[in-house]
Length: 212
Image 1 (cartoon, rainbow, N blue to C red):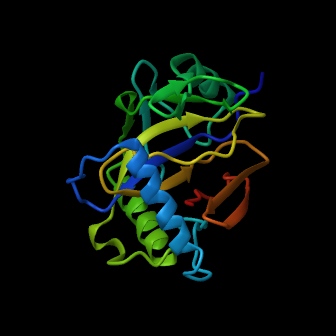
Image 2: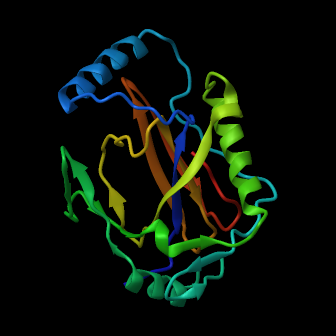
């Protein structure tokens, strides 16, 4: 089994609003359906974006129980990371399930992850600023912050079938993915909202880190 594929870090992006009204799951789904209806007539705005981060620094990745991890990710380090990881679950209603026919990937809990390079936050903020600018977010990046959610590890043949991201923090409105340098051919990502979708074919991240 090859373990040298893309090492992807996902961050939840929040608008800084810590207050969240208490609503039932049924009410939440009804609200989402209403929003989808309005989005259908808004126009051709971006629902997702992707691009390189120029002059991106090494994050200084360190994993509890393993220590510093070099990038680009080597086969040896990838195997060690898999040993410390768990099978990534997916949400179905109030449940968290593990089913490799739906999601085939591993993940490392953020409590095990340290990003030691003091310049790394600047790289993340650049990605946030470019993302909210290209998505035309109201207020731009003045009130938008990125929070580390998890460290997924996609091996050869890894995937996550079409799904809707759940709100993992109050005020969350999108997901930021930063792909770290690793030895891989290509990564594919399909993003959609309402009836619009964008298919990203991301070349080898050996050349850059890529937000979307």
